[in-house]
Image (cartoon, rainbow, N blue to C red; front, side, top):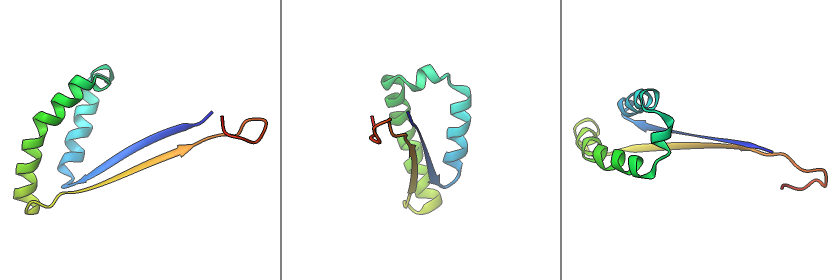
Length: 79
């Protein structure tokens, strides 16, 4: 038995704030829909590019962190 979590950060921080607001407003069921997620990606891409160009001169940055934990079974192996 184990668990995992993932987080992503972007610059400018505006995108982190906006994503946090969206996550709190949009039901989780929609985020699990590939069609909805693709729509959001397609919708936001031009906005992200325009803002990054204005704020960062076209240089965007990303960071991603993934934490994974697990447990060994009685034989000392991972399941």
